[in-house]
Image (cartoon, rainbow, N blue to C red; front, side):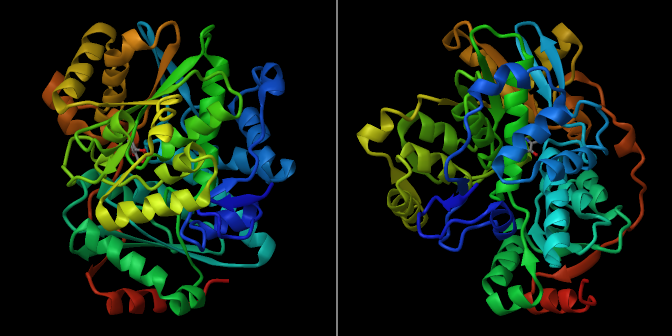
Length: 459
Ligand SMILES: *Cc1c(COP(=O)(O)O)cnc(C)c1O
């Protein structure tokens, strides 16, 4: 399997190169040159459990079948739920719980896979990797739990001091592993991200320290997520196809669903749900991609104003025309706005419909689902459920499947306010108080470099 860049100016790569590279050298994102079509295999795939299905699925993308089997088993051994994902019924709605991994958010599914893929690739090449990232919450803890204790790998995770929730901070700093370094930065999330970007742009430093990223543009993350869309479409009994409903931020999760649909799984369309940060809902309604200002909401993992993975969708929408993608993204970065041509606009909603959900509607969904079914949704998942309700009449006979992206105990305050109950999870209750393993640094590039250099070389 060869991988190509959405900007069309990078020579094709194999799976290992695509995963280790992350962002393509021409600034684009990587995609398989000709994705497989699973249609003829569906009856057989339908009989498999999640681990078998997953191994079969990923082995079509350039990962050897033997590697895939053992890697998938190891990646998901730490999950609470034997089949990795769990289905629930809420009346007409189906819910797919994706939060049974170590940090209780769906990001574990992709990051646990990526951690093991890195390990296999590095063992083969004899390479090492210093993962560097910035987090405003869920990604940091999921990445740390995926990298901890892994050979040939170290992880440095920056977060803004006092600006991530207490629970999220504890999930990071309580990890007791030599190869994990949490950096509490005296600054904002943007300061953290700027430090990381500057260091990645310092090619000499990047090379000398084998810096790598685990952000949501990494192909392995998209691939691991496409698995559960395919799986859900076969396990759920839906004669008119399923419609995944996806609470969306960076467009990574929903893009994986779109790929599964393109590859022949019985998905009739997808619903994209945003919170008040509605850049994507507006784009899918109007064809205009226009940045706004970030608003802080009760679903913080969706508080974004530019969605890195949208570029992959645009590549297909533009008929795999890398120049058109390059032009569109350049326009967006320079002017904060880019628009589709009328002919492109005509196909924009063939697969994806967007909808913005207010905080009130999100809270109403938590309350209604709790009153009617005794089920507690987290605020992100509730945005999806509210979206499914608001689109019900347009979905016809198709069966909506809402992605439940986090365990409610990760975001207890909102739930307590709405239903008067503080959701818990034993793993979060067990997080010990105390300082944990963390280094406090100023938002200063020299200090960050010195910190990284203070570690002995990996081997
Ligand atoms: C990251 C995250 C999202 C958004 O997913 P994207 O892939 O960025 O669209 C939604 N819900 C939760 C709980 C998350 O952690």
